[in-house]
Length: 450
Image (cartoon, rainbow, N blue to C red; front, side, top):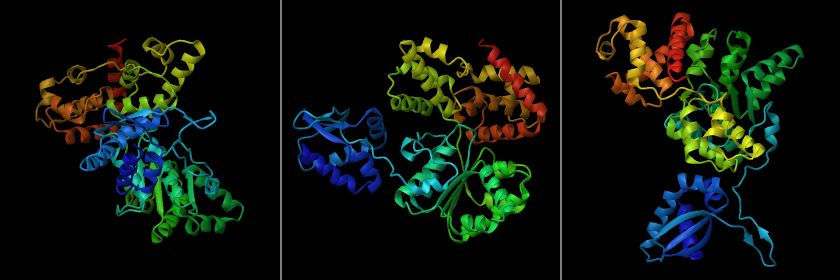
């Protein structure tokens, strides 16, 4: 048994990075071989779920290579390992997932990194896959022809998680790097303080010459702050010349942030811009499952599916839901079921119901006085285009349907749907009348299920 697992590990060392191997493969423990099945023990349920989702196929592929040598193992299964009992009766846990080392450089940041915000804990789905890949590429040094990354997302979708994961990974590889992680507001306050206290040269040296990685959150805060934008522009030029890494986060594209200087916008547009969209149903289900495992909660599939149907846009709210549900269950000594979930999370659960494209088109058509057939037609008349775009936008907001499914309902392709949704989202910020119309239609839809 030990020899078989040792040979599998030898193969995996050649296919995985040293960090991933030590973090996720080393802690696995061969427990037994029974009926030609090798059972591997994991430190906990979270560890088991992560290995199953991310490394199990590679482990089985390594076994397939060994089977050519006629080993007596045909397949592999995973289980949570029991405690180890040392001679003398002492009980010890098997090795846990490795944590990043304590690093003094964290103290150089006005905001400390959240140690939970690592790549390993980020749940990847269709909506965030590109942003995740771009962040990993920057952290690992893979060639992406950019030294700067702009993470674009609404609050609660994971842009801070990814920005901090980059810093975590870089520091785990080289603790001597200087990583500054702060918000744009902190950067502004520090600059103002330096100007008032005759410390501007020290400020410039810190960020232009003493910085290896700069992570600036909420860059839209700099709207209208011309002097701060100018100072940051010079700083970015210095960092770019030295090929230092820069990460920005914002809920708006550079061109959509008002009162940004032309030169500063140019620097931001030169970043690799990666958008994080709200997670789809399957991803939400995996996020909730992960949060439950991390909190050592036993939650039925029915409860997880209930939460995934109603919590659609905010990962932070999903975490809050799981925490509140677990707390109420423990304090009231009640089982975690759907009635308890409904009762506990009444303020958080979005009662959007299950809408169909036809029901949404019917409401939108009656409001704008156009027919469903007209919305599905090739017509480009203004009195048809706006209702069609609003209908697609509401389908995206109020249902779990994919872009392709929405496109089929409107006789359009997924690219057209995405363009229409973005158009409405952009116009809403500037057109109060349109914003009110969409709010009215959303209220009407919600009343249908109350």
